Length: 319
Image (cartoon, rainbow, N blue to C red):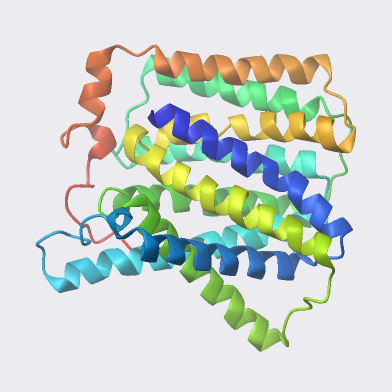
């Protein structure tokens, strides 16, 4: 179930690039896209929590002191206000300067960054099987994206794209410290609220956002908010809770495969043999991850396993 949720999340996120291109064609600016995306997502998740109280889960921190419960909530809001808002802003700023395929290639260095960081922090271990899956997923992603042909290179765009990858790496690792303490819907709502707050404040300081585009723009923004944000976030947090950060990051490499396929269907882009081979490699990495012995899966879910280390109690590193 954890792997399926991560793949669903990757598919929803993969659709965002196509939705974004269609929104830009309808006159939506990157600033408006980000503000409406996070603002609408926060409202939708808030409505879900109001109508379905059972999805709120246990109170953060259970019976722990209110200061610790407040710390968990603060970390969740900070994930959106600092992490997600920054990553999304860097990504769409880079997209204005460079081709989407090269941008995605640079961004998808983050599974390697997550795996290496998790190992160095002692929160995960790089088993031979996981290492093979990582190599297969990364190689498949390279084939999928490089198979698109020549992509324009822009130094500043490349720097922004790598900064987005680093920011997303930190975001995933910090998310793993709170995902076990908050229900996925509640955590997603707090993250979206934090991101919307940051972007709203920035809009006020910079003189506002142009929302005069037509219904087509609003339609694609709604698709981004509902499919590529709300559903994608809920599936990601639920999957991360079951798999751990490294596995979730590796499975997320399915995203560019989805992007390439949707671009073929909606934008008339053809998949090359190299891209098809890359997609097969990414899917093979998913199979490798799922072929682990049952005992290994059970150990990864125990509090003493490296993938769970540091998660049973709040630590000073938890922001």
